[in-house]
Image 1 (cartoon, rainbow, N blue to C red):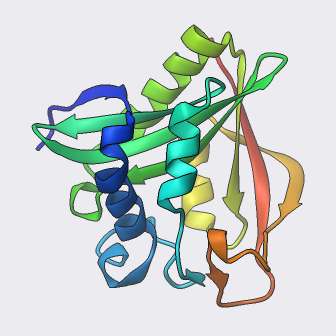
Image 2 (image 1 turned 90 degrees about the vertical axis):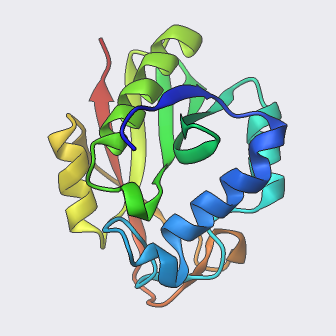
Length: 176
């Protein structure tokens, strides 16, 4: 563990990618890492159809960190236009967290957004009730914009909330 190759996801990666994302964000396996949402949400984080749509969409890209044949992590970027890209679905296998892979995936996503989408700013949303994750992104150069967005409380495709006050805060970083 530790030496990773980075590449764009393809349709053949979807099954393993789906298992990684679900295992890192939801359920008992997620609690092995520090970035899970299992105390805030249950149900799915994503589904196979959404991952396939992202992979086929030229305005989006999922970047994988691969260790041998295993997908160790991923990040999704999306071109929002006007120099703005969006970073989301940052996922690291819970058994590999705290080893710097998240930082490497963020950097790979930012580089791809500049190279492929001519981005000069990166935006993300984080559940407001995750102060440790907000602090992590602040250490990576992202700042709170003062904006917030509603959480899709009634859409089980994004999970079933375990509390009724979930919302997203918007964070942004200027890219070189």
